[in-house]
Length: 552
Figure 1: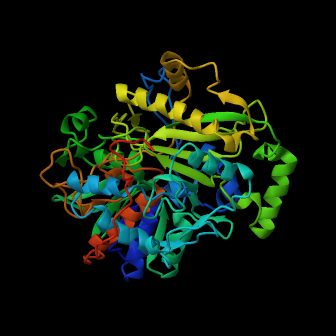
Figure 2 (figure 1 turned 180 degrees about the horizontal axis):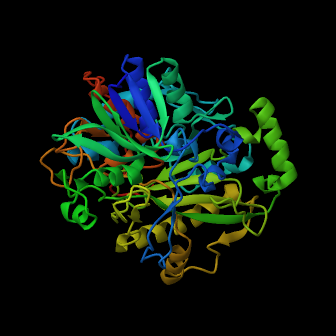
Figure 3 (figure 1 turned 135 degrees about the vertical axis):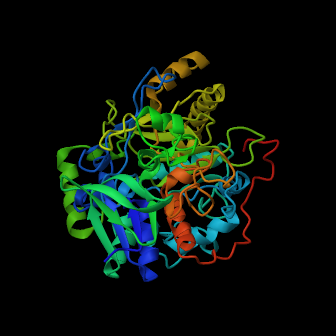
């Protein structure tokens, strides 16, 4: 039987849409190129550095040489697995700031202001405070996505929050509630000791309805007849075939693969498509443009006490933690270890936070390489709203080829000023009394690097992506020449085709992007079903009363 809807991509937004459409009684076909998400490397939260570095689960993309970062090619992991990037990410849960969404609305994404999206965040959540305070009025109680907090037993988690307060910053016990600004507990998509990916939260319950078929195949192009999307050409088991939909095709293939698929289908900048011999269906200049990401640095300190996770950085300890998790789903394996966080403003005159911190009680990189010095801890820090913009373009007209990913990181003078500020503000936090019992010395950048030039050289060599690409199929008004989709996710210039994932963000949100990506899937599902949007919220966020004159 021909499905009503085809969804390309079983990632964060795709799984959420499959669930909402299936529970409304609609027949849905989901196309996913990646394979199973079973096994401890994905399901055990503490093993998070493994899947994003495994070809089995990751598309293996990297950027073009970045001219402002010594021509380094930066890793750009995207999930090639059931659950998409929600199956390989760091499981950090951040809604974004209220003002991020108000900015979306100002940019032409009508109906996507904070008052409009907050009800969807509540609908998708089952929130658990874990005994660490919080803001229940602002949170959801019975959604598919469980959001929890780690135990925060290591004294360094408390020290980080206390140091923030000593430095004069706000504390917040729920950055996803009324007040994002401040230091407090970090939230994670972990439930009963398992990674609570979009696959676990949404896709598996959707499949149980009997209305969802999951097909493993590579989507090669959207089939468009008389200006309407009618299906998807896929490569399945070495054979090309066309899967047809009676209703709509929805692309939810990531901020990298969604613009690629649109361009392969003839939707994009006409001149670029012509270069690759692709017939133009809709000349949309914005497809693949407006690429954004968060960059971050790891500010690492050597610890004076052996209380960090480094004591577990050996085969025996990892085996014990792994065994405990396998049999009981408890212990250190049941947390991503990101258990304290902060959002702060970099200077007076900035209305809401523009710096994010992830705190980690070990000095280690995302690729799993521990600092040579042994016991240590680190803060991941980076600016939230860089004005640098990059692009996704086709390398060829062959669907099997990776696209060209060019972020154009650090192309604005302001980027450098913001990053230097991040380093100096972090040093100030680590110099507070709360850290005195724990700090031995600064590992990275190293206390001898102080001048702007010295810090810039460090940034060029060490800045890493936080893996938050977005914005490449920007949402806006139908008459906006740079917009790719309208506020209902409909591709402008083509009937029966939508995009719903992080690619439609007009601008990157504060923090990690999994929560906003799922929210997009939730909200666009209602548009697809022709439902009235959820009633707008009257809740107003907390803004620092002295933001115009004070940095903290």
